Image (spheres, rainbow, N blue to C red):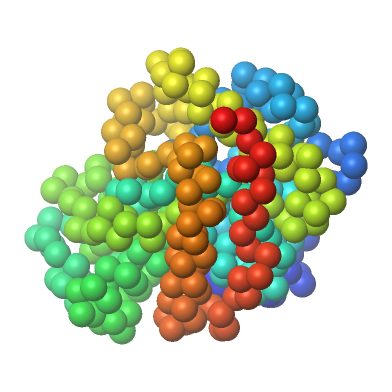
Length: 328
């Protein structure tokens, strides 16, 4: 999952991706074709697995080909290049893709990260300020690199004060556990791997930066314009899935922990670190201007930190009509 974000080059060159990416282009929302929906390892996105297993997409009249990506960045690339129609991804990664020329629209807030993105350090390092001169791994250009940069800035450091090691998230966690780097930026469930290093502790988390890492259902703008009924079906399915989880908590945890590849107890530990957005939360987020405000702040940060060459245009980024059309 590497970038600076080289999405512009990917748009021109990438026709197929590794991991869970489809080997041939999927239908891009053509009428009568399944909607291809991507998701990857994040607690706020595992409910899609429940939606599939419990037939909730069909209940809402939308045929979905659900694709799980072992590599989060492969899912970003798949949406940016038209290999899938929709994906669950962070706001900053969406803005980075748009900066590179992708046409994408946020239609749903899945959650806010409230602790499940973490900067984890080896024993002896107890603050971000102590990272000066140390080797730190993270997935370049993605959400935990963003968290690392936020944490460094808050501590009065710059990226030049550390030795940055760009690695895919799973490899970054493994390298940290093996003692190859001093600290790592990872998201759950990879935090579990990193914390297996005896004495390792989280020195900064997304809880320290409220609202900085919102996670969304993002669709191609062509899907939103050409097949709005399919997008509406996806959004309705999300809220039906949350209702099903509320009524079947034990079974839901079993399904999601299995998809995450962790124990049910480990999965339970993720609960506080991911704040799932209800329908009311979504309506508030889209109507209050808070999402637009956060998007502007992230866009500025991406360019100032060199993660994007120019600020992405925000026109068409947010489309709240689908949460407005969801059942109450």
